[in-house]
Length: 576
Image (cartoon, rainbow, N blue to C red; front, side):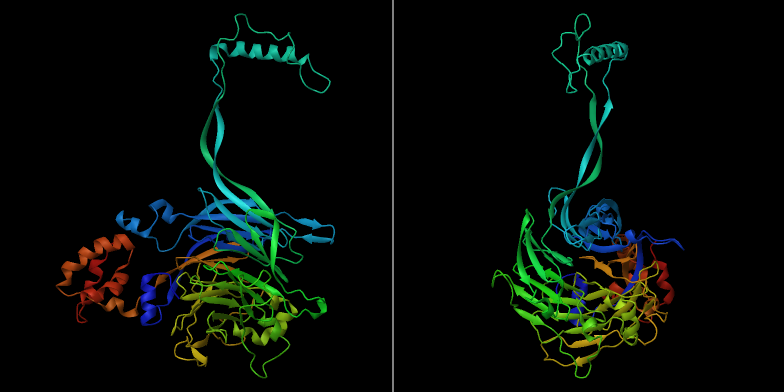
């Protein structure tokens, strides 16, 4: 898969990329010890925009909170600009609170006697224009199109009244009001044509008006359009089209196509509702447009299958172009097979070549050119398989976890229980399988398990692997199960290795640092390198904020370091 950092892509061509060492970056809404979480504050949706400069979250109280990136805004933007200005490049994207607004309110459907929650199910960013931000948000029934823009606040700075004549003007005003008040009409108005209005002798010398100035700006969110009354069942997905004009919304049985400019009409493009509801065997669980082809979209089902459809084939896409599903192993069927096979989320990779899907137990990576099976399968929490009965009893088995891919397509991530989430390397030969916690110490333990092929394919196709299995009885960190703390929602920054994940009402944004070899400290410099190293470090440390270990790791091959140099030389070139 293409995209991302050039160094990572180059390393992927020669071998798997270096595993990432994740570090805590930011947290918003962190709870204090013993603080009770309010139901309306729990985050239910999270999404980066395409640039990665803005982040939106929605909660169960119907609110949308926006965050904006500050590290590029304050220092001038692109990395190249930062290098020219000798600013240090921040290791992690930094965000700050921007604004929030009430997107949805609780409603009641009187025809169906159904209460409609205000909970935000999905948020999707639209194309920005004229300095304004646009986004879609939806609850179970209604989609809204929002515009967020800065507006100047106008205030009266001064009344422009001559102090020497302020009393006189006041008497004139009062006399005028008193005289006009006598001409009150039956409808509550005033007779402005009355001849009783009195003016000062000689008339009014000058007309004085209040002085209005705009000294500050405020963010205003305005609902541009409301797309309602098109779904009989709960909306589970919305997705923008690459044409920038249309989007889809999906519920359990139908997918509708909308135009952003038309709110009173939609086209039904997928309908899986049978003539007799007793014949219903599967429902739609997620849907998403292709990132570059405006005529293609994919949707998943509760049976664990993904269908790719082409809007050019017909107006009503009853038939699919491709079907992606994994065949059951003989003798493996049980009572829970269909439940845990239900796909809760799908995401297209940035290049549009691959689809990532999440069912209850696994992450699966699919190649849209190969419908015989997934190219990779990652075990998320295999240790829960013996506990499926307990999970069924407390309804945890029906939890819907989201998934995401990195911008370069080299890694995938998804959530689990105990506020844990897992990151897997999906490039050929990668064994990266990291377990992280949504906390200020994300690196609880790195789980590195060697990959083993589940079946072999031709040499031209990526080998199918299954990774990430853990020991049964405990979670990935050896702790007892905690099904009440679950990490359902997360999003990967489109261009940085940074993940925004929601744990209850808290938003955590861990970043990463490259891991350096353990023997870096033993690398030393020769006499000839004593002249080169200070020159390089004074500029490179300022530009990239590298530590001496990072400098040695990345640039020593260029200097051709000898192994028998003195160990003490490394510390002498440290730049503070």
